[in-house]
Length: 327
Image: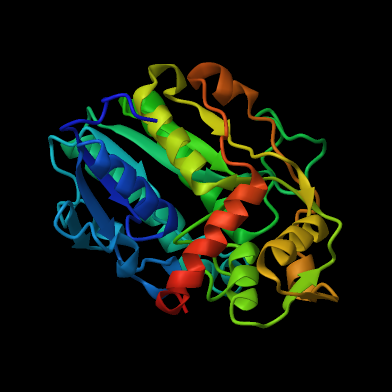
């Protein structure tokens, strides 16, 4: 997306040193926005200063924890757009440390919204929600009318974070929208562990010459390349028709995990081992999932442009050069 809407606009990105935030920052800087990144750099959250290599003199970085957003003056009164991407994404971590997940995915979101309400009531806020809030699907593809029925602590807290944003829109008039992201992948994703996505771990392993583990393999998923997610976030920011709503994002094509593993091996020359599903993971696995995102497409004109094979090749190319900075 490049329409001049962000030229000279002041933009805040929470979680800005992370995977999606840093890719978004690059696009916005190139479009002339005045960008400030806020990131706690807490180890479980995925921030990495290497993600903004080359941008150091073109944006501001504040190492702050948005749990104290109001006290620390995270938001200025003249901010035009807030992309709220800060949070924990590990489903397993949320089960072993639910209090930490509660603190970052709920308390921190309320802190930011209170700061916005008091200091930046005219800012547009785009919140990164997740498909995990639906739980195990009753039907496929999953549309926004599907019941919200999370099966892990992270899903419950992300659903609450989304609800806070939409509540502040209804009650206080803050312009807010939530995008329910599916499996996002691409350059700058976390590859050293499974806290962000299993695909990241697979890529990290194959590029180190190690076989990766495939659990099960028949589950169906959709994947969205990060550049397409950045397009969607920016469109959500500038399109008034989506204000106050929550929308799915999807990707094409739908593929089984075994099919994805085969595509990755074909592109990378690696290998995988089929393993039994770990019991603690099976308890919180949602099974098949792919989204119906026609509502968002109809209101914004968004469509994913990067096919899965091309996206995998771009991602592998990035990490062939930069893997050491992500392990």
